[in-house]
Length: 314
Length: 235
Ligand SMILES: Nc1ncnc2c1ncn2[C@@H]1O[C@H](COP(=O)(O)OP(=O)(O)OP(=O)(O)O)[C@@H](O)[C@H]1O
Ligand SMILES: [Mg+2]
Image (tube, rainbow over all chains, first blue to last red; front, side, top):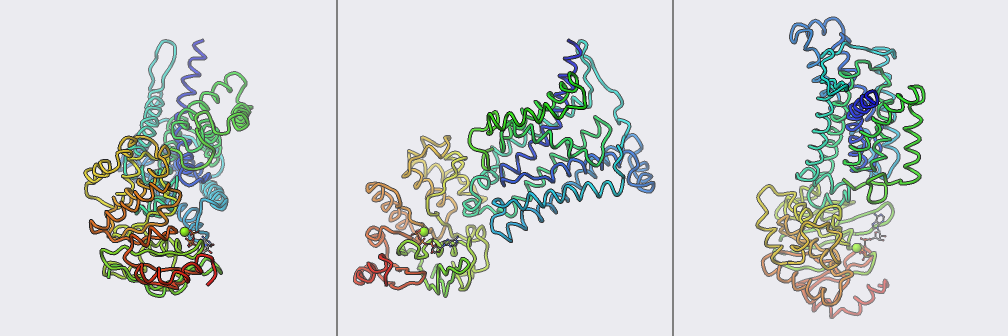
């Protein structure tokens, strides 16, 4: 019983990472009707930047500078800053070559499959940049926070994991509040429903879209950072592994639905850990994708989706 | 002259939707643009708002050459379109739709929104509901109110009476005339020729993208035969 309870806790902690990636997916789908395959790449880039800053991956010179400025135990701070900056810049480049390029060339980027293909290109390019620099073997760090933990009964809670879960939920709640209550949030929702009419209100769609790309990118980056800190092993394909599960979580919650992505993300985290517990790690994808296919057949709008799949529902 | 359009062309690929259109509108005027389906009325308004590209021509508005301005910049400059089919945001509440209308402004608008609620109690009663619950007439009132919140100098309306009951059409035109009496200039595209000519100071009849008749409502009525021909798609 205690073992099972421990697995449930671990599953929810892992789910916290999936929640942020699922919300990043759902944000771009909800607004632009675009399944953005660069999201796994951004997650991976942030996770690897975090590793590189902490494990000397940027080379001896830079490592020495980080040691001098921050001191060895605090190099994770540099990792956080580098990951956030790199992912923000990458998000802007990606926006330029997926959404904006298509919009300029074809009028309405959201109606074309091309952004999806070019985003897939970005995913592969980023993975190979990382492989070219650091290889494809697992990259590991020592946890900067050791084994800090506390117990409730027989269940162990890792303090960094608890903080990570709290942080990711707080960020997603903040985002949802922003969407519902602020001027920017209303603009995003109006673009999601009718981009042309939003323009008539004076919304500069071409300036809001990059902002949303960066917000989605930062969600992935924070998820990637927390992943490296908590699970200490990453590689060039970690984005694929995490993001495919996050997509399952997003679909479970309903495309374009922020609240659905939260529940769906936590659920797939739980499902993954419990599947490993009961069936072993080798077939963990089977229950997750089995559940996804079941959902697509039985309830294609997801558990909470209220209207048809597509854009325009936050 | 508030609005001065010269030699305006709009093309969609091979289709020439507007050809060599000249149009003027004085401050305080209601000018109507009439024409059959496909005559190019909507294309003209979209070009004025800056949401379709001009193939040729120049637009002067409120003392500035706005030809190269983006649509949001034109909204900030006082040029606002109420689009064909109202285009309410149904995923937003009634109140949020009104807030979107004021998107281009940075000054407080709460008092103006309250005035709109006083004018349209039906909107006030549904302020926190999804705008999808509104009837067609209420949606048109919301669309116009939303546009008014951008504080336009020129309000452009694209077939606002479409789909409204005769009683609501009368109410709508009363509103248009009242707004004009308060000083608002209006460019009105309509298929309801009778009502439009009654409200307008001047008008144009479009046929295949070009103005074939222009002048006062009396002029237009006098050339009624030509007008009728335009509506039958002849010439
Ligand atoms: N996006 C578009 N792409 C291609 N052709 C278009 C497009 N929009 C309009 N047209 C064509 O341009 C011409 C003018 O259309 P427009 O919508 O401006 O006419 P309208 O006078 O507003 O008609 P209606 O009274 O039906 O609203 C028509 O022949 C139409 O088929
Ligand atoms: Mg039209």
